[in-house]
Image 1 (cartoon, helix red, strand yellow):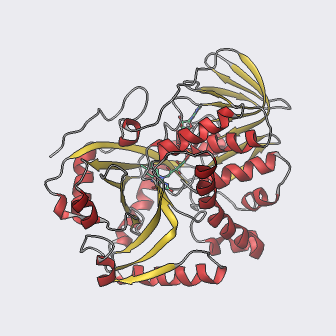
Image 2 (cartoon, helix red, strand yellow):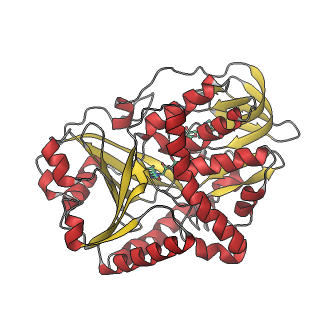
Image 3 (cartoon, helix red, strand yellow):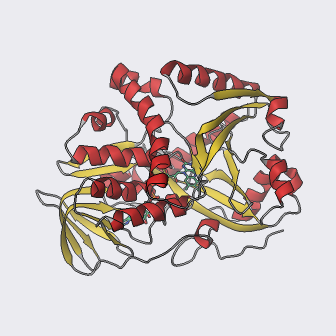
Length: 434
Ligand SMILES: Cc1cc2nc3c(=O)[nH]c(=O)nc-3n(C[C@H](O)[C@H](O)[C@H](O)COP(=O)(O)OP(=O)(O)OC[C@H]3O[C@@H](n4cnc5c(N)ncnc54)[C@H](O)[C@@H]3O)c2cc1C
């Protein structure tokens, strides 16, 4: 039963629940002249906007160029889950970054959610921020993974309480028979209206003097002492460039494109549910993920819809019957929603890297790039933006942890890397079945 409220794509923004409930207050103009700045940032998602805000707060003169609208990419389309941690499995990187690097990554994984907490409070950003998150186990082996993760986090000094739940306790937190147990993080992780968070962050930067241009697609970058960044109708001369186009950057810089693959994930929302239905599904109003590679993620929105997402494919293409596929996934978890219509459906692209650790680095002395959060970016984008701003301001320590991590290009070259990767991910999907 589908009654989609909007077409899947509109010219301005994706036809999402987020776009339909956005706190837009202004459109930013396109760039139409030649201007100067200390720093020019390419891409207006969480990474670009927060780099802009961090640098503007430090007194730099900054320009942001966004090809579409602020938050048009993954940032304005995602599941809205605010999850701490940077990348996946820090221990794997110990040989490259050592004990101090592992410690730094762990600390940044805590700081990244705190940045959102502080930013929302400091700038009074209305974005339906809620704390509370549940890891949901589909198999006993997942519970073992949660136990090990809890032990490790506690040894490292994680400041929030993690509570393991058995099957029966789990039923007190989620109205589904699918899960054998879970791990509750009631205060450290959470969820929010991501488009409104990013709009609020952009506004905070603008109010402090940052210049933002929408509909300003960067088509050329000329490196040098004073790099030049060209759009169709303007140029920015700057001392530093930060590339934050992530999965949508395309082939602007081929060396970056070879290390990232755009994977597609899709999201639907139901019509608003009654208070009783909301309580029956998620009485604590927490966000939920399962631990599979192609995971389900879901939460309630502030107006009482179930927002349900899943990783549909690794080819970067939107599935043909997006709402049909997603509806089946949702009903497996919550069969009681059989008669509830879906009102919005959309998808977006996330940048996946081979080792699933965000890629942060320098192309040249003064051109920086940030990309590849591999599906876990709402909070980490805030951290990467801060580290890059610190680097530009002369503090290299935390940036250097990332430059020590190797990021290999995907095999197969421009033509075969997507099919090679899709095949590789099929292996993980099959492994998740057992
Ligand atoms: C459907 C979906 C669900 C997700 N769910 C979650 C979740 O629940 N929790 C979580 O932590 N993470 C989630 N993620 C991942 C998270 O959304 C991303 O990691 C994060 O938003 C990346 O932000 P970004 O700013 O780096 O990239 P984006 O938000 O993709 O922004 C890049 C921007 O750059 C612009 N751009 C590109 N090229 C150019 C150019 N040449 N000139 C000018 N502008 C350009 C694009 O228009 C775009 O607006 C999800 C991702 C998707 C797609």
